[in-house]
Amino acid sequence: MPPVLELRGITKQFPGVLANDNVNLTLEKGEIHALLGENGAGKTTLMNILYGLYKPTKGEIFINGKKVDIHGPTDAIRQGIGMVHQHFMLVPVLTVTENVMLGEETTRGGMLNRKQVAAEIREISQKYGLHVDPDAYVKDLPVGIQQRVEIIKVLYRQANILILDEPTAVLTPQEVEELFGIIRSLVDQGVSLIFITHKLKEVLAVADRITVIRRGKTVGTATPAESTEKSLAEMMVGRAVELRVKKSEAKPGEPVLRVENLVVKDDRDSVAVAGVSFEVCAGEVVGVAGVQGNGQTELVEALTGLRHVESGTITINGNDATNVTPRQVTEMGVAHVPEDRQRDGLVLNFPIKDNMMLNTYYNTFANGMVIDQEKVQRISEEWAKAFDVRTPSINVPAGTLSGGNQQKVIVAREFSRPTRLLIASQPTRGLDVGSIEYIHSRIIEKRDQGNAVLVVSTELDEIRALSDRIAVMFEGKIVDILPANRVTKEQLGLLMAGSRPDNLGSVITEDVAAPL
Image (cartoon, rainbow, N blue to C red; front, side, top):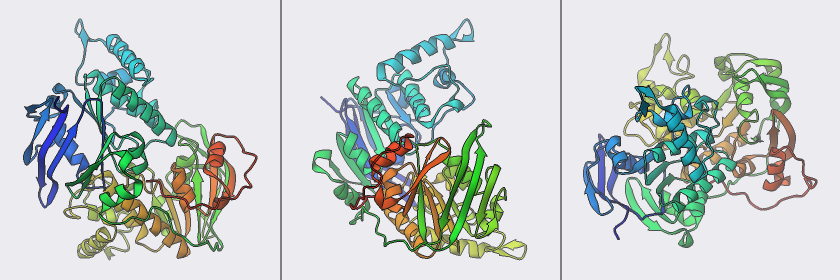
């Protein structure tokens, strides 16, 4: 019996970049095949070819042993192929039903038959354990539920080959577990999946087979049983990778950031941050742990001038920073890696080099009233090389980069200028193992240079690995601030759920691995 899908000799040449170089891949019926690789390795390009978004330079595609030509997504859908992209393709102001039927509208008497489509969504939802309300508006749904809507969209179109592109990049640990349950349900019903990721733990937990791509080429295929995180990391990067954060004991100095009785509202005018107080000293990393949606986003936005403070004070380097502008925050020596890189970190249609100078164009890169373009080009090239931004040129739009390389552009910009305070929200979201290792080392380097560092992450392993102290947020409040070496992952989980464990005094001594 032939494979459900076979890619033979797929090659894709862009100007100046060989994205895929003679890649071969097979997918069996009811299989979860993980496609693993660094940012910019060619994983998404390969799947965009399969989905008809790109035309291969050469190579062939076979479905159930029959050669097919895919000239666009419509052809892919007809062949039973569905793709859930890393950045969701949903219209926020429409309902789930309207998003699902968009482009394939069902009508009755010349009118949209929302009732019939909603009934089909409920049937699909029940069959695969997706649990989505067809009448809900997408803008009101958490990210994890929006992803389920994307899966329903492709199942509604009767896809039996499903491509999930970095499906856990924006999910909480709880949502990841729920997604894995959904994936297993899909496989039990006969769906075959290609799971694109760079997270080693997830690959070992959910995949049946693993294919590793490095710089556009297939470097090997293995099963989870014969693989380890270390072996997969070396296949991905081409060298030994340090899976643990190496750091010396912190030597905190004077407070750089002081927050007192801070109250901040969310977009619905509800209190998101409820009287929070804490401080971050020079030479230490304070990590903020919590399930997404407990006020962390609003806290960081208030600290960086992106959200209005209702009451309370923010002090940076002894200066009142309450309700100042983002530019004023930058001029106080604050670096900011935002949670949403595309909304708050980049102008996607600007060249990479312009994104590198977004917050310092008027001083560092200006010669009087004129921007020094030669300096912009030279320094941007240096930063791109230092932070391994994979791109044919710094003159191409930032939106053409993979998600991980977009993150590297932001990190390069923020880490490459003199600062006193680093605020990093989800700093390694969407990054591969090699990039995580590098950025973690740079965060610790900033700490050791005397910066105060505030790290917000939903990755508990990352929080524990980087932090000297950990603040846990629940329902807009900090429920406790603890030394990182005196709290376990299980204790943190209880605090994040609003419960206080009785044994917080126990000391842990084991090394903590990075979130791979």
